[in-house]
Amino acid sequence: MQKILIANRGEIALRIVRACNELGIKTLAVYSEADVESLHVQLADEAICIGPAPSKESYLRVDRIISAAEIADVDAIHPGYGFLAENADFAEQCASSNIKFIGPSASVIRQMGDKAIAKSTVQKAGVRTVPGSDGPVETEAEALKAAKKVGYPVIIKAVAGGGGRGMRIAHNDISFAKEFHIARHEAEQVFGNGSVYIEHYIQNPRHIEFQILADHHGKILHLGERDCSIQRRHQKLIEEAPSPFVTPDLRKKMGRAAVKAASAAGYENAGTVEFLVDEKGDFFFIEMNTRIQVEHPVTEEVTDIDLIKKQIGIASGEHLQIDQKNIQFNRHAIECRINAEDPARNFAPSPGTIDLYYAPGGHGVRVDSHVYGGYTIPPYYDSMIGKLIAYGSERKTALSRMNRALNEYIIRGVKTTIPFHRAILRDPVFRSGNITTSYVQEFMSRASSDLF
Image 1 (cartoon, rainbow, N blue to C red):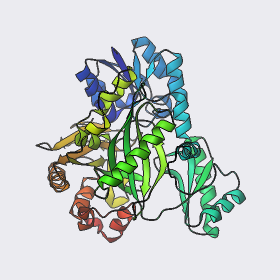
Image 2: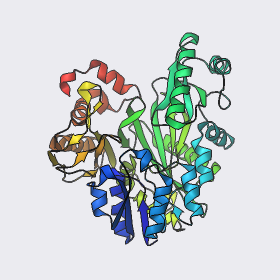
Image 3: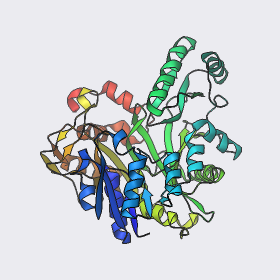
Image 4: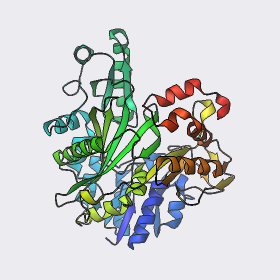
């Protein structure tokens, strides 16, 4: 490949620019009017403005992105995560324009993007899924029947969902009707698809995901797990690899299941297979993300494999030159998502101008961020400032480095989640590694707001 258009913004766009620079590939940044000062726009070889600040008039405009790609004569488009990354129509439009989409095919995105179809696909491959309805449920009566069959509590999930949207929990028949209609309405508003399905709600599980790579020649590998149990309203806040809960034997079993799921889908490129794991170590497939994940750096630091470069290589038709037996997990890595939010005000967004910015450094610390002193965080997009990653030979070392890095991180002018992460890093429950998806809710209920 000679030139790649980056159909995204923020830290992931800068991450792709850096990978392309190391590969000797030219980059084209597309940006909204609000992102003209963003670092990825300044560091890309070329940049084209594709519209006003609202994403529906810029980053979600397939026609403008394709036009920019044709004007600049690019070979491929990297979608990053979010926006159009899991949009099958966009992948299809790239293909019809003879532009390589760096990701799986449109048919695979459709197949795995519909969670009900994805469940059916992996079930046929022998991968266990959470007990639930046989596909989408259309009416309240049908949904209630499914809920009673799988047993309360249940979770109502949008088939086109993601990022924790279109998900509601019901504990009995009385609450079910209300939550069912709320979930359908939210799914329709956010995804343009109001279809939902029902699953048994596994209480206090761990959220464990497996990174996979698959080339065009039939080779599929897993790069181990990431523990994403630290989340708020189904949005991940802290991720680490490997999981302090997963044993070598469980890793082997879950890794095989992840590869089976990817193979059943006919998957190519980088992807993530997500599971819920109960206290007994039983695991259940919940979904597959057909893109690079926000938290991919923890896997990179543990395995020393550059996932963005692998994505580009696979899209170029290259063979994966690594074998499963040779993938080593020699380090421990932790990532904190640093957002422009105020934890003391229920994580209210805090856009604005950064007056002073100092990123931590030193051995075992990595910062993926597109901001700098004087940069204005716009109110139109997600509130991520960047990702702070700390790593070491063991979890204790990674925790110590993360604590040190959080104390060094200086961002003035906007509220951030740094104080929240500092408080969690001090918490004995978190440090013990004995955490589930209910951890943050429990932590917030016992933590004083003056910690933030």
